[in-house]
Length: 260
Image 1 (tube, rainbow, N blue to C red):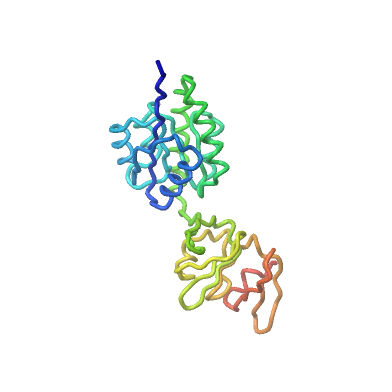
Image 2 (tube, one colour):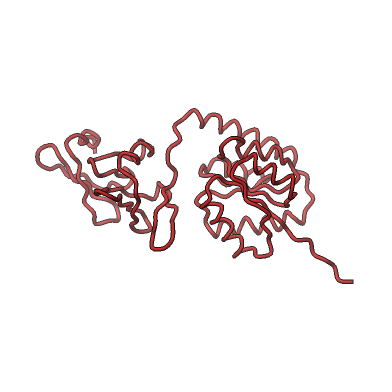
């Protein structure tokens, strides 16, 4: 008699539709046997859909409105294999070190997803009880989240149209942003892209320890500044590492570079 192989099922929970679609399409390519039973927009939906479908795996965004990913994971408990995805590396390191959960850092990289799939396939064959490390990890992550919530939640990536696709650009890879009347140019390690956001909007959303506005139309990543040359009338020019661009520093922002 032919043995029937149980189909492995999964649930995806993230409040960003683009990220849900990105993960779904990558899973379809890298693990075609995996069946996605649903997509939740928040933690509460994730728990409700889990109770209905009882999937083997749940992909949970740590930060979601209402019930967050950590609270949803507590409700699901050890009834499924949990994979967190997050923009904050410290959650990922904790999950990996504890071994109770897996993680993906946004934006999701295909090679990292492939490693996660391999570990999930191995864990699905095991029956090891990780209850103590599982609960301890969730407690630690919840504590870190409370501490982080007291700090400004700065932009972690920017969505930009490149050709016919939408790209998620990590902000740490952005060298500078320069606007004109309608668009803002995003200059990053992978090239250039255009977005419909003003410099004013971006300035308020970016970490001031990394980014500085140097002109009414320019924001620069300070980690990419290679050289500052003083000009006439209390102005300057910035030379960017790895790029030919020369960016202006107006009189109002020159004080930021007096020590450079």
